[in-house]
Length: 217
Image (cartoon, rainbow, N blue to C red; front, top):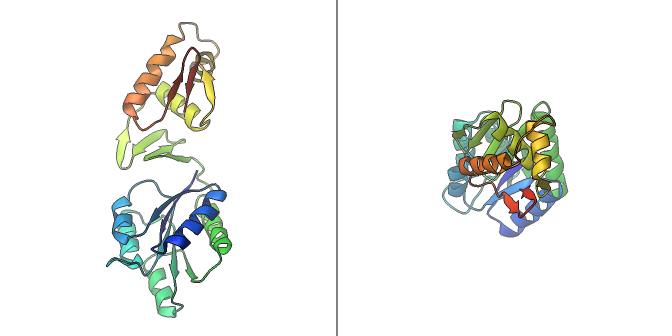
């Protein structure tokens, strides 16, 4: 699931855009103040939508400068009530990927988001986000914001099983077959130990025990 960070101080508009993007399957994090958005930079995000004129002393220009200091590749869409060439030029010079003028159709914004996500991440379907965790399936790397989490092979395989099947219940036998393989012979209590270790390393994972059966994320 891709995470979109929306920086918009008009609350009604922010809520409307959030609804449209969530219907498309995106995880949406909203900010009304530029300072809060800057504080979040470095946490999981695949695309930023920035309003240029914000309510506090920090503008969308300040936010994109802070973004680009940490990441030169993450896509950014600027929005503004002012339709001036200078705004567009400055936005592009600061590294924005698109510019849309208010008032705009929420559907149009969603289409632009979809197009950018497809273009930027067309060869990168390996990144999964869950809460503050960023999980690179191909590289088998897990980060909590900027901190690396070291997992064993079995721990990572169990994590993938849960992440890719959120809310699905697994019996201990199903977990054994998926993580250890069909040829494993031994007690299914190794599953409990593996879950315990994974919970300890990634406490934000909401893994629920199902009494007498197994587990569910």
